[in-house]
Image 1 (cartoon, rainbow, N blue to C red):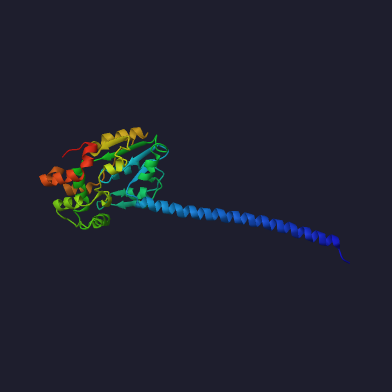
Image 2 (tube, rainbow, N blue to C red; image 1 turned 30 degrees about the horizontal axis):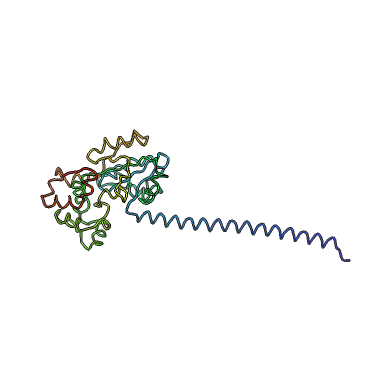
Length: 287
């Protein structure tokens, strides 16, 4: 006999299963959308990180302590970064190396390059009146003649010149080579325009000043007064106990007791003055 009640129950059961199936499909679609958004976000983040890696000007920003360090190559940047490192939530152990004398140190540039604490100059400029308005922005600068000697001793008086130095020269159709004479090194640097210059000899005002020439830093310390000026920075960012480590002892040993002036004659002195004239004027340096 045909059982209508049984068929009705089966129909209701199937409808209930169908409703449940639709609900499951909606949940799966929602999860798929979220996953796709996550993947897209990851790709965009990777692109942004790659862009930061290619950026000429990279600054270190700490949002909790509200400071930005506008760092410059060959102005104790390794020492300053190493001193600031404990303030950041970073694990530097993957970047620890052993020196020839057995001492150990962290490759602080790589530590920060692999972090999310760096911002580009464009980001800082866009946020000077907004996000970074109340941040303490600081930098350190160095006598241009002395800085160029430091670059020469560290990057050229060696068996091989670093690839980034070679690339910078190649972009300007000139050449660096190991142990080249200082006079030739200076002449080569002076033939490389700002847009093709590597950060180790790029003019310092390009890092510290906006395109219209205004200082972006609230405080500009000097390499020549490094420890006292860094102590002021440490006080400003609420970390008065920070101390600068001893770094780049190899440069000191290679340079010996020679003063930077000993590397120059009148012609080379004038060449450097002309090439870095804006630095000389902006930061008040003289030979």
